[in-house]
Image (cartoon, rainbow, N blue to C red; front, side, top):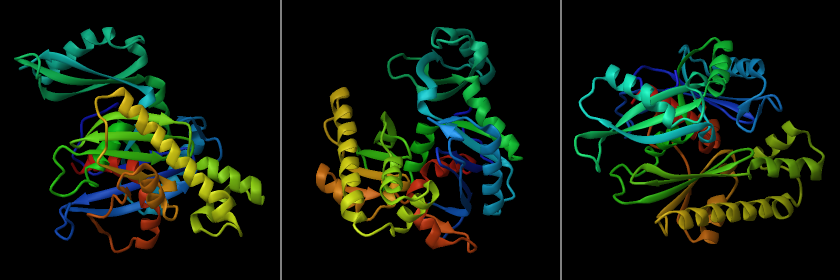
Length: 355
């Protein structure tokens, strides 16, 4: 159930966030798109307050009902679904194993040796692995990526999907799903040797992923997100939680909002991204990134990429993971483009069904 390996059958990707559920379904084989992909269905459905806290599902029934509404709103008939657990809830380890083993033999061998890598009793965790390729350091051996998470972290998401009437097909890791989605943001011909930073701004946290040659080499979470902006709008102008979120999205809050509230928030966000990059530089052998991509719901704020790029002196763009695919004719393209920067994780999960 806890899976790293893509299953090439159609499924829907479901991002269970702090404030909403996002749903994506893709299909492959469309000549009109450079990626060969078409977006068939999408939906965003708000979650009840505190149904999810610190990336943990608190109210499984409420989350399941929200997923069911998102499925109904999207119009999809697909029942197989993929979700993800936060990277902070997953232990990953690259291990070296003998080459030439059959899958069943490799699985048995990993289960025998896993207890030396996992600090929990094995009966309390979900394990999975993926063969990365021949080991560069040990001839005749292979590198295997081992991933493990406490069973409760996986079961919470599985239960929410089942409550919604869906079939849990894949439980992924957020960082790997984001890496999958980032492949669509890179130039079609690739960028040999490029180091690209992705700042994913959620409601409560900002996560910096740094990719080198298309693979994530660094991830860091910081406690800063769109919730700070929403809370300040609520406090200053007396709106409800829902009203504040909608007015920020519409860009129609109140007189003086742009100067008094929005500008300081964008400056603070630029500082947070800059701080995360400094941690990256100081903790790795890298000393620069070639470009920065901003994703998440907050990324749709006007001219955010321009301000962040100027402050950090890094070429900066807003994520649009749908730029290289066609859209089903029934979709609301305008609504999709408004939400596109926040759909990266759902897209990365949906890609598991078409890879």
